[in-house]
Image 1 (cartoon, rainbow, N blue to C red):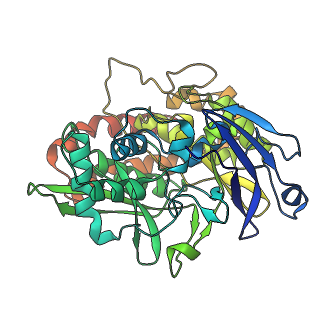
Image 2: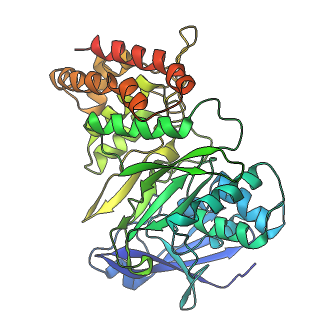
Length: 407
C-alpha cells in the first residue's frame, strides 16, 4: 500500500481546492487542514467531526471519510478484482474511480487524483454491466476487464444491491440492478414507483426513470436510473462536471456503521444547520407508511449549497409487504422505539421534535393520501407483473388508511 501523503480536495465556490493532507499507516490515519484552506473565503468543515483547525485529527479506519469509500457491493467487487479476501480501509478508499466518487471529496497523490482516468460506461453498456453483476453475485467466472469496468462504474455508491454510474445525455446517472435470483417481487420497479409517489406528495427526490433490457438468458430485466444529485448537470463532459459536497447522516452524526440512529438526533442536527425539519418529518411519515424499514443513517444525506448544508433528495425508498401480525421494525428509531407508525409521527412529541404544526400536518396528510391512492393504478399502468402488484396491495391500502385517519 502507498504510504505517501494524500492531498484531500473539495469544492469551494464551484472550484476544486486542496483542503488538507491525509497520512495513513496500516489501518490508521491522520488528517490536517492546510492553513490556506482555513483562511479561504467560503471554506467549511469537511465533516462535523473535522472542525477547521491546524491541529491534527486521528482516527482508525476511514472515520469521516467513509462516504468516499465503497460500501458492501463495491467492496465485494474490489476484492474480487484484486483476487484478495482482505483489504485495508485505505485500500478501499483509494480504489474508487475519481470520476464517479460520491460528493466533492477527492484524493490526490502529488498532482494526480488517485484512480483517475476514463472508463465511465455509457447507457448502452448497461446490458454488459448487468451480465457482469449477475456473474459476480452467482460467483461465476468473469473476465478481468469486465470486472474492472463494473468496479470503476460502481465506485463509492452505497448499499448491498448491484449498481453502477453511467453517462447519458451529458448527465451522470446511478443505475440500480435487479438481482439475478432471489428477488421475490419487482423490487426495482417498486422503488421507481415509490419515488414517483413521494414526488407526488411533495417530497424532494432525484430525477429518475426505468429502462428494460434483455439479459444474456433472454429475460426482461428492469433497471432504475436516478440522476446523481452530487454533480451540477448537464455538463459537456464528466471531467468538467462541478462536484457538490455531500455527507451522509452517518457522517453528520459522527456515527458508525451498524448504528441505526434515532430521528431525534437527526432532527436536532437538521435544525442546528438551519435545514428543513418539516421535509425531514414528511420523509419519516412516508417511510413509516410504506414500511421502508431500511432507513439507516447512510440512507439520508446532506448537500453543501451556497454557505450551508441542506437535505439531499430522498433516496432508497423501498416498500415492504404489509404483515398485520407483525409491527414494522425500523433501523432508524423514534425516541428509542423501532416500531414506528404513522400515528406515532403525528403525535404531539414527534410534531414538536420536527417543528410541525398539527394543522400543517393534517393538511399534508390529504396530499399524501391522494398520492398513495395512485400507487396501484400507477404500477399497473407501467405493466408491472401481477404478483408484484398484488404483494404490495395490502401495504398501500393500509398506508392510505393510516394517513386518512390523520386528516
